[in-house]
Image 1: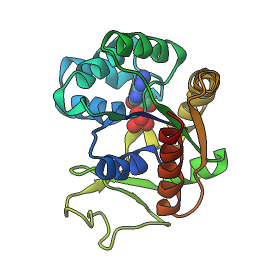
Image 2: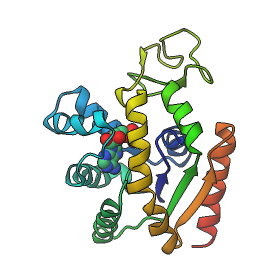
Image 3: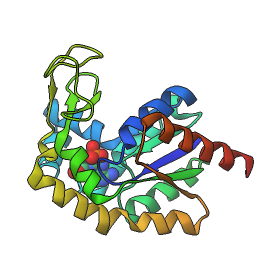
Length: 219
Ligand code: AMP
């Protein structure tokens, strides 16, 4: 099963992707995480990507597309994968489609996680992330037991540079202008399902797995 998680920054793609990856035993491919690892390790790709990420802009398509295609070609993707944060515009979606076709693969479902803008801003501005395992917290709604320390692995939690107030607005604008057209792109192919992203995390997971099961029944 080759799945895309669509939705604005802060909608919960990362959180849901992690759970789905465990329950279906297929990898979660988060372009944001791969890019951040490159920034952290000061690779040439990371140095190039950083200037865009800091502004809340999209990293150029060629950089991201090559990164994703390399990842999908790895053996652990043979039974499927979950794309989280990719594609982010129509060009990326169409290159993805062509590349998958060349590999005898296709996208089976694009799940859009719906969250209104005010709630996205609230989530992003209070979000804190573990430097090591990537676990996500919120200063008010889901704080760690010990301030500044991850409950899961004990490492430091921090605020992503692009979760600072001035960058959030830019990211949400990019989402509206560049990424939202993908809803129409995948709807036209009969591959799009929208899920309400407000409420308990496990309830949202259940809605997603139901949509996947329904999609499988229709195959
Ligand atoms: P995310 O963690 O998915 O919110 O991504 C963080 C940042 O990484 C984004 O604001 C972009 O600068 C960059 N990024 C992640 N995925 C993509 C993508 N598919 N295309 C271009 N830039 C991306």
